[in-house]
Length: 100
Image (cartoon, rainbow, N blue to C red; front, top):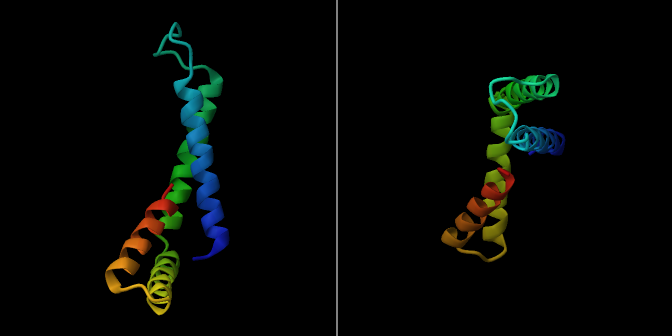
């Protein structure tokens, strides 16, 4: 998988997580129906990042590159002596880790 795309995705997810943390951390005495300008700006930025992430994740070349990476990882694990089941479990675990 392209390291630049992976970095951009992780960076976008970090921004999204920070945005959610800021939105959630508003004081409980604040009126939940009235949003301050910072909240509006953070929501706008989050929306933009989520749309960009969706575009990247739906990119045909990105999908092909990720599939090639997964296959190469599986084959490399098998060549190092892991059986099919072990290699598949390790690939699944690495994919789950990449999703964060």
